[in-house]
Image (tube, one colour):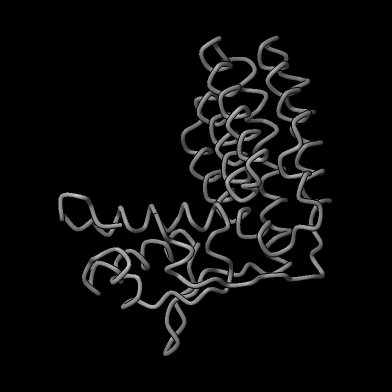
Length: 228
């Protein structure tokens, strides 16, 4: 949204705000993103709105279709499988590294993510809880001191958010407390073997919460989805 001091936001800030709306499922897969409407909502020029959409397309959160415009991306079932297969290759080893390096401060940060996730669930904000769950996984990559891998994981988690919005059938599985709590306990004990095994099982559970034969998406209006 436009700043209170009448300074229009940059394309980067617009892209960040829209990215969060996508991650929190306020903007559904398939929603049309009209440049003029985006510009009007944020109080920016069409050029800035276009740059924001191009940035989101680079992150594969938005699809730019010739002669049709921009849309929130809709990963196919095949892409969904590939994304979780890639996460299964990367994240268990990252969890092992995080367990070997985690400090008490790191554990406190992870616990804060869980607390915020549970608060979102209690408030009925399931999209926000999924976003926070993804941030939990990104924090693990940070703790592991694996910056290059963390960049890949960030892209995969961004795609995962879209996949969940399209295909989930068991919403609670995306934010079940026991998986993340168990991981924190393994990190606190510096048990790399256990952390790696827990992450493997957690990712399998996430996949089983999806129905890749069914697409359910209900695009909302942009103004409603992006309201303050």
